[in-house]
Length: 442
Length: 179
Ligand code: FES
Ligand SMILES: [Fe+2]
Image 1 (cartoon, rainbow over the protein chains, first blue to last red):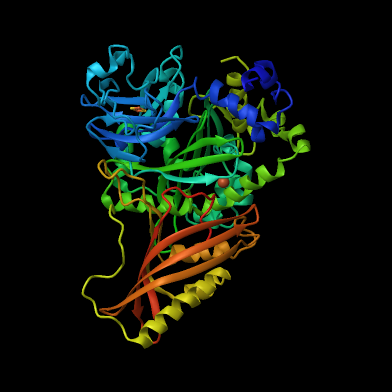
Image 2 (cartoon, chains in turn blue, red; image 1 turned 30 degrees about the vertical axis):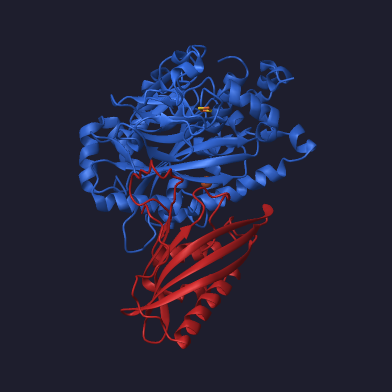
């Protein structure tokens, strides 16, 4: 029996109790559920693949995954981006085994079948009569995803023909907020290099849920390193205790913001020339919010997270904002590969780009001072849930019960905003989205 | 960025004296011992105030398809102040990552030394074995290090270190240590 047959949509839906705010611990450890997630989520949603700026020229490629399926993202001779299953239509050999590269076309190493940059069949190594007309080469191009779409230089793909365009997932409302991170200058953001890749000993959803808005862990787990955000410990605590909305920006898309107290000078950690560009690009409400934004963490279901914050690692240097984009790449129920990119405004000076990269490396990365503390907490979650009793119990998101009816009415942005970062509302909304996809509603 | 250095050393340099070779080798062993014992405040005293401490990021690339993009990618890019913050974090029991200290062993070998303008260029190979409480399966990292140790008058100080890992993808959740 396949996982699909063992776990019905009704079974899966019963694991998230939206009334009580509880979730079965099986979501973090169950291999059958994991298998099912790969099918019901990763073959059906929009999946983040990479950034347009990673493959600027025709023939440039990077290798990625959609769930557990390997794919190639490549730019063809017309400048169009293609995403293909990274496996030869002949006998399945991986076509591109490197992390990144540049090619004129693809040649399979095994028997030499070749493919154009647009994925179509180019030739077979041996003369045509060898195949005696029996091989339908026209149909044997690289297996293509059903749809590709982009937003702010981010490339998404899906295997799902029926899924609506990306704007129905990353909606206008989402973009209102995401533009504060990704679309705040005329030219937008560029990638600072290939992603770091490292292993996390936890279920792929745990990091994503945390980045939806685990406000309560910031002043505890990060109490030592946290004050590196902003100018001082006082400023960090003020942000932690002050205005910190949890925003469900669209279905399955959640964000937590820490706002600078109103009396503080806005736009901490940006050079003035960029602030000028922000003001030319965003509307007045967005500018007000961006100016007060201290930390911003965000997860777009299923597995893409972003985090930005101003940090300083020298007393005599001002804080600098970094922007990290991260994928929680599923490997197994208790193993995840983290892929971590850094982005910066294309228009920024070389000096600021370098500073932003260093700020990111020192905070949110494999060697990140914040990630270190999170990572051991998450490894310890997997250890804590490994037995049959662990699986039979629930995780508590019951804080939502007391907050679900509280809405920050006059918050100057779309979506549903909860009044502070302690509500667990955005984290639980992620799990509600999981339930929609796994439970058959989507 | 794209080509891995075989050694830190420029061709044609002068071999150092036996005494210097021994002094610097022992310095590296002493450093390794400090790191394995989490003696980070003492380790900081070996660093020059203007130190550059980098761990470049490698990628798997096909010989005929090589392409690099972006700024020099890295795992770590540190200066004295940021190393000090890291050291303090790792030594603070209120910080989660090393609240239960991991066990670490450093094997330093293949030491090559050349005298340079105001100190020594030193190339060494390191094998680090680390055992964390949350995963007792030993994790190892190997690297080639290219150092510049400068003579500050009364002691040699590390002023530049590039750590070229052999792992394009790191099979561990943290880099909560120094190398
Ligand atoms: S498997 Fe690719 S050509 Fe045979
Ligand atoms: Fe965290």
